[in-house]
Length: 222
Image (cartoon, rainbow, N blue to C red; front, side, top):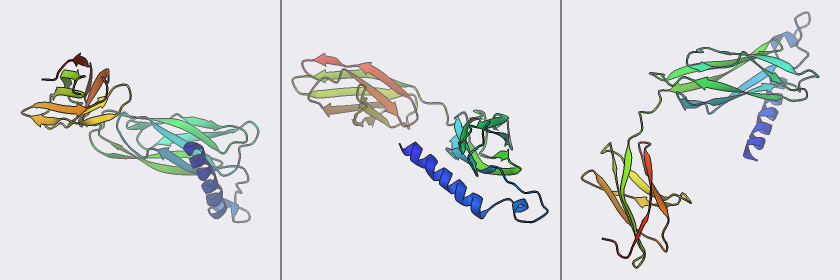
């Protein structure tokens, strides 16, 4: 629903831009006149990504494509960092066409890449920012996940390979946050009140690592 509304906004924006910013040739007698649909805009989403993440590009036409569609030429200012297909076809009657942008996972520094689309004698561009990918995730392990039914208490103990990590516990089946584990000399612990055995818990790290463990039911929690 939100995506459809967003695309409609893009179409109306393209029409407005096409009326205000027609190619110069269409404004002067004797010059080449652009009478058919042209590439009035390009949109990339997201506009800033970590290397290795796929991006969706959208070409916006000034008018609906005629029977047979319109072939739009695509290019990237730095194909090694952000690659695009050679072209994309706007279907008959449509004003939009999407295409995939593949980013490199070996980017060492933030790089600005210009993505361009050309059709009807007009070229439009959008800026894509590709950032270095995040460092490798830490290794998380759960040493204890016990539920004491008599007390309605769940105790979780876990560790991370990186002492700077913040660990949070979740109910695996629902994704509900139980809480943040307290760090005690490299070991993270937490005790949470629950009305029933959650079955299994997942511990996620602020550095990207995670682990899941089946909960052991006990009469009491030590």
